[in-house]
Length: 216
Image 1 (cartoon, rainbow, N blue to C red):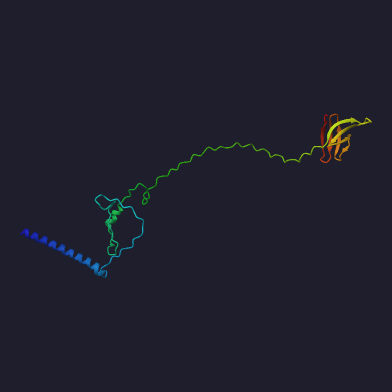
Image 2 (image 1 turned 120 degrees about the vertical axis):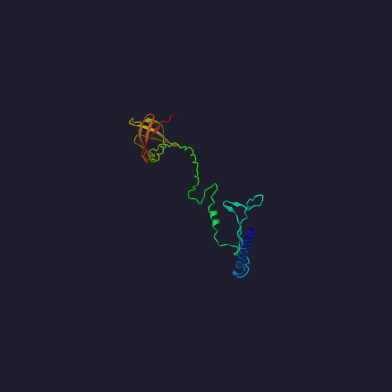
């Protein structure tokens, strides 16, 4: 009797499970075909044009790539395949993912980038030229010197009365005689006569020059 009673309860549990499965399947079929106004035709969404990405490495057995926190799962693109229900388990798994890179964690305020070391350039030796001492400025140039007197002194003699000395002067090919105080060529005045020199004033430039005796 106990054995038959246990077998009957087991069959009853199986019937309840089958009935629940049938009800769930009926609800799914109802929402798929009748609630949406007929069978939904999934229209593939236009794919964005992007550069070809390098294929992700997979294992030898072709298993899906394992991401930190769980296994990647394909998501449908049709409106019927999207599930608006929040899955708290998946959210908790994503929150538990920790950054494992070698650079800076942009999601952490405590992550500070390593300081950048800038090498200080070595300044070349500065060669300073010797600076000459700055003195007072040179004086402005004066007037040009007067031209030399165009006469040549080549001798003297005593006047016949013996009161004065007469000098012999040469201008080009002309021979001129003059005593002290005489003016030659309306420009040159004889100031003094000596044995070997004669002093002549250039009245145009107000300048006196000494003419040496020309030895024959």
